[in-house]
Image (cartoon, rainbow, N blue to C red; front, top):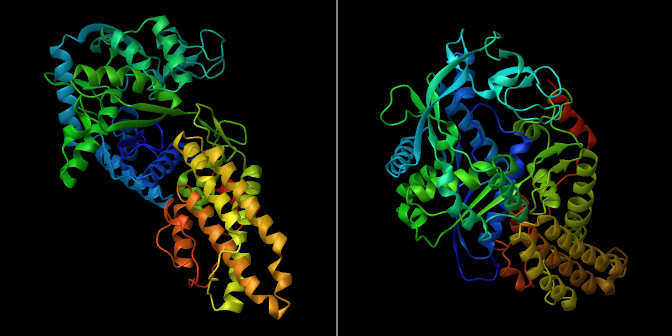
Amino acid sequence: MSPQTSQRTLLITSALPYGNGHLHLGHLVEHIQTDIWTRVQKLLGHECITLCGDDAHGTPIMLKAEQLGITPEALTTNMRESHEHDFQAFNIHYDQYYSTHSPENQTLANKIYTCLEARGDIIKKSISQAFDPVKLMFLPDRYVKGTCPKCGVADQYGDNCESCGATYSPTELINPVSAISGVPPIEKESLHYFFNLPNYEALLRDWISNGHLQAEVANKLDEWFAQGLKAWDISRDAPYFGFLIPGTTDKYFYVWLDAPIGYMASCMKYCASHQRSFDEFWAPDSSVELIHFVGKDIVYFHALFWPAMLSGAGYRLPTAIYAHGFLTVNGQKMSKSRGTFIEARTYLDHLNPEYLRYYYAAKMNGRVEDLDLNFDDFIQRVNADLIGKIVNIASRCAGFIQKHFDNQLAKILHDPELYKQLLAAKPQIMSAYDERDFARAIRQIMQCADSVNQYIDQHKPWVLAKEPEKMPEVQMICSMGLNAFAVLMAYLKPVLPIMAKQVETFLNCPPLTWETIKTPMLDHTIQTFVPLMRRVEREQVDAMLAASKH
């Protein structure tokens, strides 16, 4: 997709946060990525509608609500409010934020299931499962724990070993126990409903070969095809928090059936309040681009089950699925004991949200690679780049303009060639952003910032200001610096929207866009400079890590 094309309409989604806990910094990798990319598309003149919501069903939510003595509805309502509050604080915008526990989602899930059933894509068969004789419920794989049958390490989940990476079924565990009651589970038979995914192999192979996925994701899917696609279990037994399967009294849709349908439900809610047609977005001939941002751990659901379900029910398929890696902190998995499992709210209690937006952007390259939040690097990069290179330009130049020229910029651009060079970087920066290689865009913007700082160092307005006859030159140099600063902030606006707004107020200018920067501000009055961002102090980071220890 070229950034230079005519106006497009994009329907953009992020994966739905699970409704049993608060957001943490791992969630924010994806949501910041989605938000930056959406802001870029808007700056390029495209119509973007962003959708998200809470994934509100499943056994963990049912059990957590029971533990808290509240209903699953109350738990998921509280969590949704928490999630929306945190997203707003990080300036992550969704046009519609909703929940999978909604009438729209139930209607759509029933409709899709009924279409698949009518096509002969639903198979029913009895399976043997772990059953908790105390809680009187079938246990999801993650709720059975025991010793790994491959390496012998104790206290492993029923689906895979965290020590050796082996996968197996809960029945293979040695000395298994229920994670809920602590008693050994028994095996019990139950009728389950399956979606016959192999029916869609040809369609999926064709769709995958048409460039809708990153190369490394397409390669991973090839491995799954090589192993052979299998029918997918889409039912769960009561007790369960979710939607009943039509025509049953004790069988529920597995959370992963209705979770992606949540994108459609969120869209349906948006359409109802914005007088838009649902078919415009979801009909098979829709010209809208449907873009999903997801973590690498849920590619399987989004790139195999989801397109097959959509196709079987007569809807359009996604245009692109962009997968990203996990977050590590100081090179390791997030850990509560080390204080590196950091909730979004704990971060916000101690640090500016735009530090994190910038740091993530500086490390995102559009590939499916893990992103490491290294706090030494975080402090150094934010202070060196944002404070030392960007804000420094404004603070150095604004002081002279305020003190000597009554906040009035010069009438002439002092170095048109430098200004031209800054504007000439725009196509490369735009392309890097559009390709989700934010790290490359940031590198190019910082190179531009270096050239502006070199310009100021070379002309030394602080020296010239000592000679009264050189004051007109001081005004021109500092006005040039502030115009260059405006260009840099326009380039950084998708990453730093809050600071960009403060800069627009300070420069007393209309909203900065990649078009408005073509015209420099000359003979123009600015506001008095106020600090735009403060340095990160080690004490702030240490306090946040201390507050995250459990």
